[in-house]
Amino acid sequence: MVLNDEAHHIHDNRLAWFKSIEDIHHRLKQKGSNLSLQLDVTATPKHNNGAIFVQTVADYPLVEAIYQNVVKHPVLPDAASRAKLKERQSAKFTEKYADYLDLGVIEWRKVYAEHQNSLEVQCRHRQYRANSLNLAPIRYPSAFDYHRFPGSPR
Image (cartoon, helix red, strand yellow):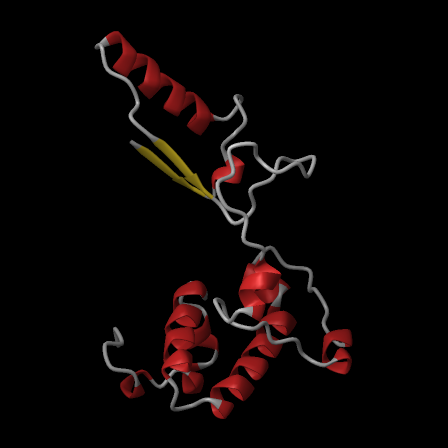
């Protein structure tokens, strides 16, 4: 069995991963077996031309998931704050997008303050930490009070 996450990236026969799966399949066939299952999951089941994959079992649009509270609601800063955002000239991601990261932390703090005691914020807090590549605690140490969250690594 092969399980592919972000599978919209693999359906190109020029890619090494695609070739690896083909190779596994052919080697198994030579031994009298076969690949029992290839399960591809993606939030973007579309080809580069926009056509949905023919093998799509379910298509659940993000807008619908937000509306049904399956995923968190996006937080959009006000227009004045967004207008001030500038990309800096730097090869370092954290420097190039420092304005965006700073504004994201400001908005996150607002949401956190509004829902401080809810389990949802604890989950968002952990997800935010995981997604930030451990850069946010370095840039914003006061925002990460790890002692408040049971099971936190720090």
